[in-house]
Length: 159
Image (tube, rainbow, N blue to C red; front, side, top):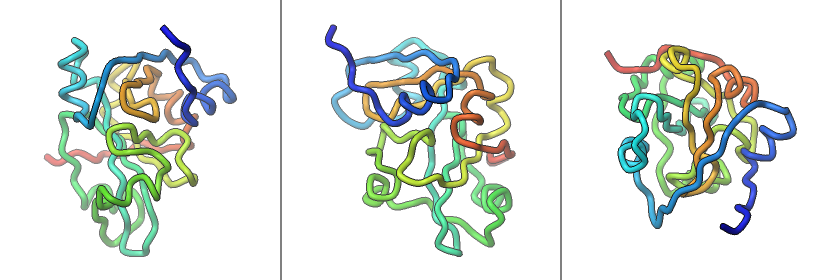
């Protein structure tokens, strides 16, 4: 197999010498985290998605949570110190993050946006996040993810 081109996320993990593993798979177009996990025989609860939001202040935030979960926007706004949040429109994801929908990861975005990892991640020794493009996954510990993103944990899930 040809050597895969590195993404910003991979470069940052290497530069910071954070332990991680990569997985490459065939993916022609956007598929959500749960479908990818099922396709690859992985635990969907261990597979995390990145949701980009914009706050009332105009600031951008990355929220990373289980692919099976629904985000509570009020809890997310509270974690970010915003009055309210809205999901970033899909058409703006690449311009804001530098990544395309389905390949978006909180590691190595265009700017250092505040990153919040749902506290459920702490239940796992290893979580799976997008590697920065379709068909690429990164396996790493929640601590390594937080170190790579300067992130914080928060309760983000809807009850």
